[in-house]
Structures are given as C-alpha cells and as structure tokens.
Length: 368
Ligand code: NAD
Ligand code: GLY
Image 1 (cartoon, rainbow, N blue to C red):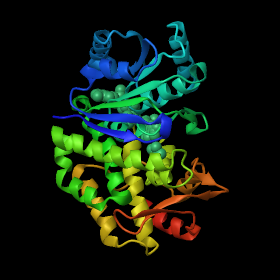
Image 2 (cartoon, protein in one colour; image 1 turned 120 degrees about the vertical axis):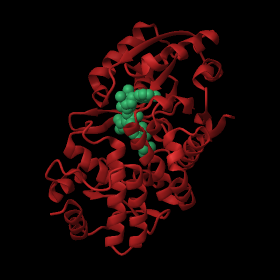
Image 3 (cartoon, protein in one colour; image 1 turned 60 degrees about the vertical axis):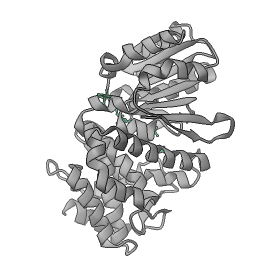
Image 4 (cartoon, rainbow, N blue to C red; image 1 turned 90 degrees about the vertical axis):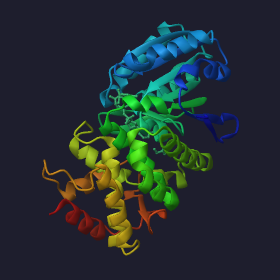
C-alpha cells in the first residue's frame, strides 16, 4: 500500500504528514531528511517501548543518526511539570544541541509533553511526531498544540510548536486496545460531523473495517481526518477563529472529564463522543438542527460501542457540569464558545446560548 502524504501549510513552518503501513521501520531515513543536526532523542512510554522502540532505534541506526532515548510512565499523569523537568534533564544530559531532533513515539500524552519540551528546550528545538494511538494519528500529533496539565486543570500550560514531520504508521494501531481505538474513533467521526457529511456517511458504512484493522479503511480514515485538520490549522494556527470548530464536543466532554477526574473512568475520546451527542442535542433543543441528525449520530456511536448516555455509576448533576464548563480554557469574558450544528456536517461557533436552554438540555440529559 502506498504512503499518503499531506502538508500542513504554514509557510516556512510547513511540514509533511505521512500516513501508511510500515513507516516505523522507514522512519530513520525520513527523520534524517527533516533534520538539521546529526543526533536525535527519542521519548516514549513504558507500554509503547517494548512494542516499538527497538524498531525505531534500529531505523535511526540504519540512517546513521546518533541517538539517545528515555521511557516515561504511560498515562495522563505523566503530562505534568515533574515529568517535564525529568524529561528536560534527560535530554540535556544526553548533550542535546539546538539542532538535536526530538522524537515523540507514543500517544497524545507523549506527543503533547515531548512537543512542549521541544518548544522550551534551548528556546526551541525541532521535533517529530510518530503517533501510535488513533487519537494521536488523527488529532494530537497534527497542528502544534503542545502542553501539560497543572493542578488547576488540563492543558493549561503549553505552547504552539509545530513538528517538522508526522509519521503515522497505521500498522501500530494493531496493538492498541479496542477501548483506546474507539476513543480515538470519536475524533475521526468529529471531522465528519463538523463539515463533511459524506465522510460521516462513509464512516457509517466503513467504521467496522476501520476498527477491525482493514489497512485501506484505516489509512483512509486517518488521511481524511488529517487532511481536515491540516486545512483548518493552515487557515487558523492559533485558534483565533475557525480552529475552535475542532473543539466540537470538547466543552461538554471537558466537563465530564473534570467530573470523573481525568482518569480511565472516562477516556478523553469517550467524553468527546458524549460531548458531541450533547452538542447535537443542544442544537436540536435550540431548534437549529433536525432531531433526525442527532439520532443518526447516536445510532452510529451506539452501534460501535461508544457511549451515548452518561454511565449510571455516579450521580450526575447538571449544575456541576455547567460549573465545569465555565472552567474550560475556551471561555472568554465568562461566555463559553459552543460548537453547535445546523445538522450533521454543518457546525458553527456561537457564544449566544441562553443559560436556561443549556440547563434544560443538561437536566434532561443527566435524567434529573
Ligand atoms: P495516551 O497517550 O495516554 O495513550 C493511550 C494508551 O495507549 C497509553 O497507555 C499508551 O501507553 C497506550 N498506547 C499508545 N500506543 C499504543 C499502541 N500502538 N499499542 C498499544 N498501546 C498503545 O492517550 P491518547 O488518547 O493517545 O492521547 C490523549 C492525550 O492527548 C490527552 O492528554 C489529550 O489532552 C491530548 N490531546 C492533545 C491534542 C492536541 O491537539 N495536542 C488533541 C487531542 C488530545
Ligand atoms: N484538538 C484541537 C486542536 O488541535 O485545535
């Protein structure tokens, strides 16, 4: 199967995204071509390392790239200041220079933390993303948002720092647990819901192939998603406008994650899936979107095993969710920016949502 190449067009900071099978074993030559220096530092986690680190290091050897690496603990708790400090120490102790290429091999946690380390190390070094989760391949590795969590909340410290190259080897998704794959799939579907109904319809027909590992379907889903993200980021890198559409489902999702404590009880992608359902429900409640479109989204997610109702293991409270939404970093002058829909494939941004309408919809959704 051929490798697909897309470009994130950002002038002199433009970079390619390559998507296809077997890219990991060919990473060395591609990283070499993107490098300005002679050495690389690889960052990964303790789940990904035993699966893929040796293959990446062998490929760097094959390309004549000197390298060092570090293996961090897996999980969201690694995205914090303490791990950033350890990571910067490790890279500096390996005698990093301005031209050292930092390589993130892992999911969104490793990509976000490593990207931020690259942004601040020696006032900014180059980095490469080798995303190994579906979520990272279709979302977090593209677009240059890097950062970490603080005790006040998620992703509150960070930088825009674009990678020099993204290599999405779709074969590595074979080892991803089904639950993680599904969570990443929510972000794939997001692109269809935002502004591409034909893609959503394609997903309705092909999602089982994407999830069950059909190589062509997987590559297509990743490529369409990355193309959509590259287009939006190319037009609005710093989220002064339309990039905020990518937050579809995230304001509601963030509130659910805040309530559950940002842990395995509810994965980010699961919260985003529920958040998209809630955004469509609110759009219907406001008379903006046909109910049939919200039902269509819920049918699709439910058929795949993504959540469309809040789990019954805790008492949900509409008021608390609204409180958490106010803590989202997309709030401006106290007003939340909502991504709503006029239908599947027709999303838009608005701050004009009456508090009563939000509360009524949420009370209904949580079953109060
Ligand atoms: P993750 O990085 O925690 O990975 C999920 C789990 O899968 C981890 O345990 C990891 O070790 C394991 N794993 C990774 N690749 C594997 C593979 N190929 N086989 C088996 N196991 C594998 O989580 P994620 O869902 O990739 O990323 C979530 C993070 O991404 C969050 O911190 C979120 O804030 C961030 N994010 C960032 C952006 C952005 O634009 N920067 C966008 C969306 C999400
Ligand atoms: N994940 C949202 C963005 O990159 O803007």
